[in-house]
Length: 107
Image 1 (cartoon, rainbow, N blue to C red):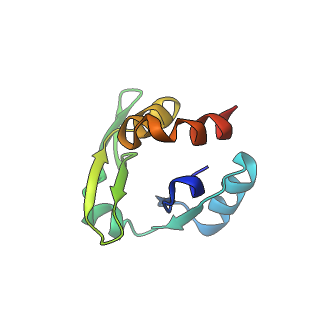
Image 2: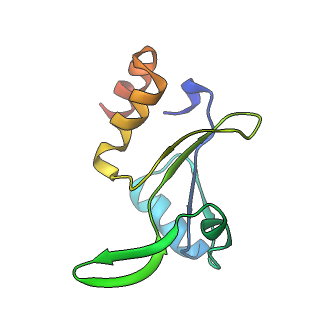
């Protein structure tokens, strides 16, 4: 899906390598998931935050998308990502010129 856009995609979470492998297989992902079990990267990027769910509070990673260019410059940050709307948000960023890539991947 992202190869046609000439971008690299990585998912990062605090889950173990085994959990990542299971998740990749279950969902048929075509990109790598990186392990951040000590939340070092999450803390450095500010996405390790207080989360509220079902009336309970706990620290965890807030789903966030960083769009970074080849020089390492952050071009955009999409916070509190909702999985169901993520593709539409990325299409907005990349523009309609790449619409065929998204349509083919999710048809």
